[in-house]
Amino acid sequence: MIIKNIFVRLALAIVIFLVAFTGCKKDMGGAGSGALLGKDDAAFATYENSFLEHLWKLNPNWATSVGYHKYDSLLYIPSEQSRSKMLEFVKFQIDSLSRFEVNTLNEGNRIDYKIMQNQLDFTQWQIERLKSYEWDPATYNVIGTFAYMLNEHYAPLAKRLHNFYQRLASVPAYYKEAEKQVKNPVTELTALAIEQNLGGLDVMEKDFADSLKKTDIPKAEKKQMTDRAALAVQAIKGYTDWLKALKNDHPRSFRLGKDLYEDKFKYENVAASNGQQTYNAAMQRKKYLHGQMAKISRELWPKYFGSKAMPGDTLLLIRAMIDTLSSKHVKPDEFQSAIVQLIPKLKDFVKTKDLLTLDPTKPLIIRKEPGYMAGVAGASMSGPGPYDKNGNSYFNVGSLAGWSPEKAESYLREYNQYIIQILCIHEAVPGHYVQGVYANKAPSIIKSVFGNGAMNEGWAVYTEEMMLDNGYGNNEPEMRLMWYKWNLRSVCNTILDYSVHNNDMTKEQAIKLLTAEAFQQQAEAEGKWKRVSVSSVQLTSYYTGYKEIMDLRDAYKIKMGDKYKLKDFNEKFLSYGSAPVKFIKEAMLAKPAASKN
Image (tube, rainbow, N blue to C red; front, top):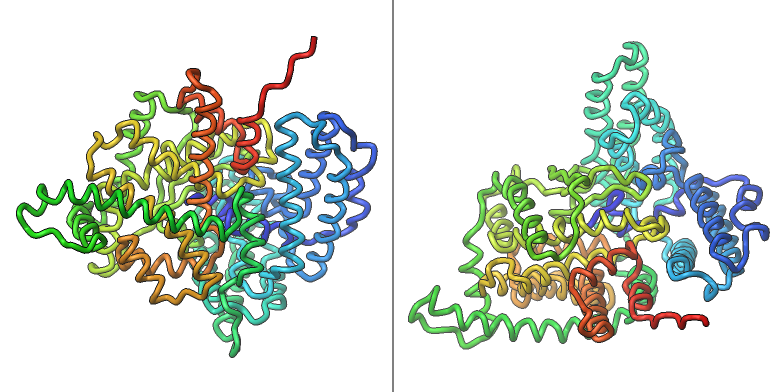
């Protein structure tokens, strides 16, 4: 899972309207005036740059997280007025964008146009229809970008700390306004908001103070700065205390319902299929995977069970084999170190097989998952923003510290010696980390700013199979069986998400699906239920993107014929940045323009 700009692909467009905006008509003139509009690419490039500059004025939090640091000292306050101003801005930009003749633009700009159009429509839909600012208290959390300012080295430490200090001034007002906005909140999202906000307090309380010690800022000034941080901590705790005490006898259900779900699926995934069609395809894929897993399990049975009678039930047969293989795993305190050791091996394999060109200058740091990210995914990737291309990429690894032996064992059986390798392929090489490096090299910032989750997750899933198809794991049937289990996880993510939010699937039914049919450990299944109750649609992005990439590769092979090379496909695909696969497919399969005599 990629968490870019603190789970931005779950909440990207939610963030966009949680800002204050004044003087809208006056400020918007530069972004949408007729003088900038035209039918050529130069005019569109000018419009893009102006559009982004105005966007960053509206949302300095988002600007900071993508590496645009002009507004680091500012924190705007979410309010009804700010949403009204953002809605005015969005409608103005939709009108400005519509004045371009999209078919006259070059390939890259045509994709940017469609991405911007979708994002603007999405934002308007969220403000007017979804209204999660009322029922999702986890929307309100400032800690991620504060942590970014401390951890990244884009500017001298003293400058970053002064901006941090100035931004802190608005934190109490931010959370007071949040309390005004929250109405009839979802119980599960209220718990998540409490967990994540409290989980990130060290950023304000400890990390900021520790960073100040490394500077020559005068002692009296440091005292002022830490005092302000204490007020911010008090505000965050006040918000969580308010949430804990909030009387909410009839909370909104976390289930979106079919109408909202299909709309959100359309805007977030930007796929060729809708939610219902993707769910149907996932059901068929599940059936196929069960067949392949049964075949391998039968082949491996004598090796692991000798003459013991084989279960007649296919699912029980597969479960028995997976349970046996899952017993091989690292110790709880070795989980992160095992990941550290795997990354160089994956890089060497990619180079040896010539699957992709890797950039050794882009750092990958493996770290304990920060507290403000807790409660959603056990492992994730956080990449640098498009304006901060030399920033660090972080492989965030959930800690098992404090877990009971039983829970830790269940988790480690899930991430056994086979799955932990596939996890590292997915999150790092050649998955999210590598895709992020390529995305930041793409010429279009729009494609990175509005990066498509289905493309990101689909690429990570696609690379797992690509690595195995090219011999990773020495073609061992055990590794292939475990990858089928892992791929079944992506498939069942879609089935789970759609069923929960559209068909009222219960927790009991969900756990049964994940344990009996997806062969997951109880701890993993419990965690996934929590995740589907605090998110929607994002879980479908894995299978949606994977399926579309595989379909595209098959079509591209036919187009290229004898000239097809896997490395060429991979690098050409990634060259489009984080654009929706649907748009990349249109570009890669387009017929060459006829030459002019």
